[in-house]
Length: 223
Image (cartoon, rainbow, N blue to C red; front, side):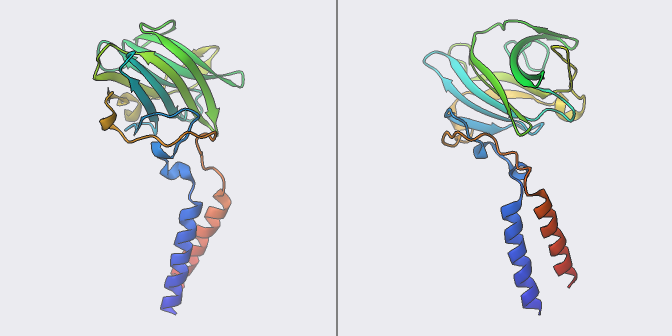
């Protein structure tokens, strides 16, 4: 009887691993895009991800930033601070949900209460944004200083959008600590997967089936 229970439990665990929503174990290497990026990193805060390719020949950085807005929110952002670390002074790429569509914009963050839509202090091209299953994605190529080995990055997931203006993001520790240095050499991060037409898997299906499996596992544990 014990061996039968063990066999059933192992079988249910295997089934559970197949049904587990990918969002619960999502890493940057599980995400696929139309373009290929040489590197990717799981950012340490806010469940965000960055894919990037540094081109030393023209001092450009191509990026795909992936994150879900805060609860009830409607924007995400990734930025470079050309002069220092932290939010103030950063030059931001932002995706905002406006009138049912996701729109890319650029903002100069000159102060904690000064978020101004404007051109950035460096060139930006191929800027676009979309949303897949509640996850927003920003795509762009930006100019970085010649022969730079790293840049100061800031990333954020925001609150509501009022008119065309992003409202303040949550002020919990994770939001305050979403800064760091991005090393531009390829040895600093994991390689990104091959390109695909598919977007980020949000993994929100199979929830009911997953709950049933957990209930069955509990029943067998009791037995």
